[in-house]
Length: 169
Image (cartoon, rainbow, N blue to C red; front, side, top):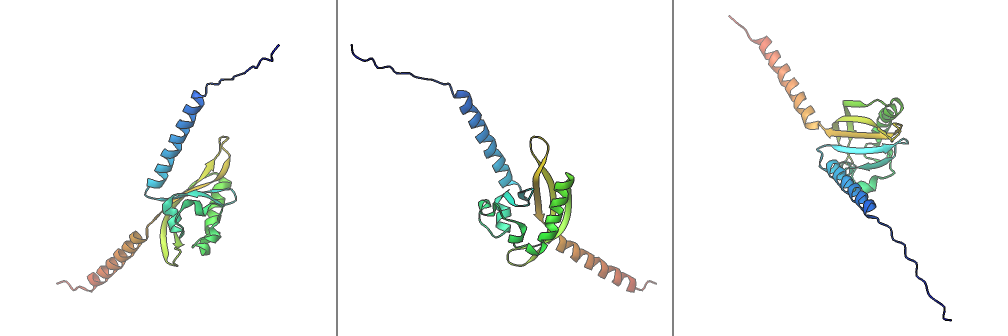
């Protein structure tokens, strides 16, 4: 009697899994698009204050060409290393308190050594259990605005000085 060969086939419908994967991929692409198109610099760090990610504008501000180049780095490795302790103190305060620090002005140093003004906000990053796992930060370069404000103050002071010197009849 000849040996019979048997083939066992298992089929599994993975349509639902593929749909979930496609939805997640689209969601991730949308979020990445938003992060890249925002007119601010965006970064996020873990609880140990190592960079986990950023947008391309932030990477360029650090002297890098790609966000991937910053992964795992700290503020001590950036052009603003002189301000690293101050930045990290802000980050730690947000992480430890769980409270955001919003719309404050601070100085920063560019990779080429120039000093600029920033308007910064930092918020805690939370996991699914609402535990703080890091920090999300955004900032805008407001150097030109600060220069204009200074020029206006100087002009106003000069005007007031001249006005006081005018003689009226």
